[in-house]
Length: 153
Image 1: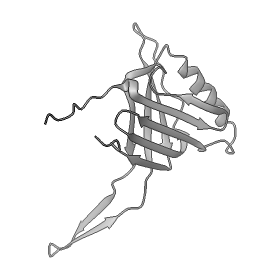
Image 2 (image 1 turned 180 degrees about the vertical axis):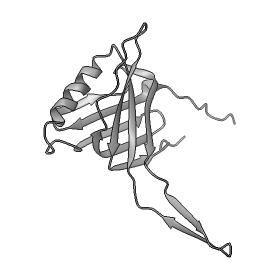
Image 3 (image 1 turned 120 degrees about the horizontal axis):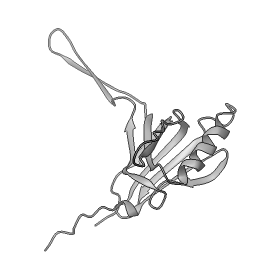
Image 4 (image 1 turned 30 degrees about the horizontal axis):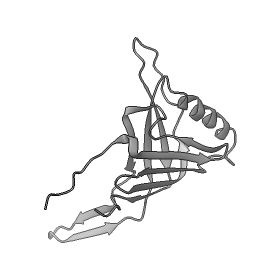
């Protein structure tokens, strides 16, 4: 029996940023996301390993789930204005800071990434050059929960 084809398309990626000052900013397909897309990475390793003088090994399981999310947006996308407006609003008071949730999902393969306690890292760099570039919006997240490929084939 032939194996099912494994196919990926960014068109199946849905991402939304919610928090104080917004009911939701779409960051997935049709939001002007650049070729570099959306990337998440954990802040630190889940394991630390120490080796003793006699060669014995001790592993330490770390409880952190913190991480960083980078969303690359085409310079000409109106999404940059939405994010910049939200950044300005949230940076006015600590009451609004680090209260965002970023939900990322791929409906075709069942990936779901939930990022809570998200805060803008900084106002992104912006280059004026010959060609339109990208603007990278970065978020520190207190907790990132990941489920990869939950669709049953």
